[in-house]
Length: 115
Length: 115
Image 1 (cartoon, rainbow over the protein chains, first blue to last red):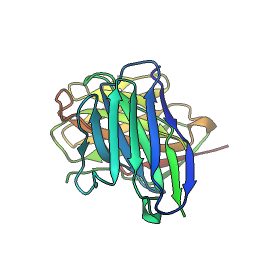
Image 2: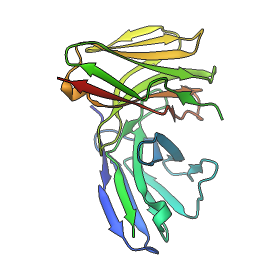
Image 3: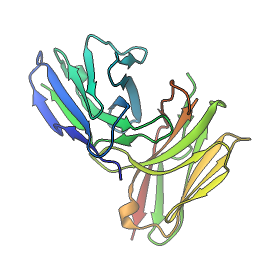
């Protein structure tokens, strides 16, 4: 089945640090990748949609300068949390989809903790 | 915005019994629905999907039922096993075949399987 790899799985860093999270589709080409955020005991909230070779589309209320997304190839998208603060601590999950008619497949998430 | 919601936040089922997890959606434009299973500390795992032109779809030990009249979706798990313990999310996808295709997740139901 479709495999999506997300790295790192856990990050602990000081306030003010920028953190980069990678999302890779290992056995298929991902035309579209999605980035979600999930707080404890809550559902997934879509942050942005990323199409290969074009700018990401951010959901309302998500700061594009705070959460930088790059989707430079059909197998890799990155999310950079710039100047992270404690309120940015969360579980960040990416997903990838091959074509519009295919389901999204998710990575195992990145637990980000900002001290 | 419109939401996808669940009736029961926690469902406790005895091993071997059948489980039924319910989901209500409000966006009548949704034409594709997916059930995901999320284990602790991991990303959502695809279970089964259904399109709006169907009212039932079966997989291995799982069945999804869609009632468009009352905007209701359910996931049935036969012979529930301890490994089925997880949080289950329904997700809806309006305009599935369009470029705006993206998922909206429900609030989730925790399934606890007792021995």
